[in-house]
Figure (cartoon, rainbow, N blue to C red):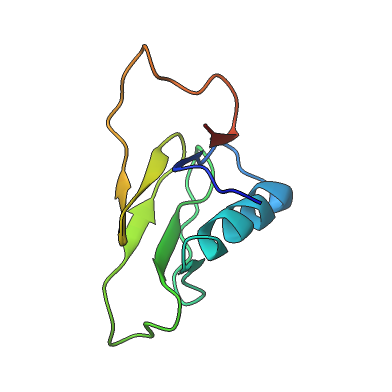
Length: 94
């Protein structure tokens, strides 16, 4: 299965959204950091890191509700916000 380059983390994310994010991340060699959890009014924020990096490895990336994360080669980054390329629904975008 081919992975897309971006993933939109929705506001008000639920368990199914977290599972979908974990599958998408795993396809790029990344994982949700289980040691970091942040709840907010718009839903949970998630910390992601390269698989196996552990607490002393790369700091990773914090994804807050409503942001789109982009796989950029060997790293993750927050995708620039644009109206023309916005993903109309939560989840993976092509």
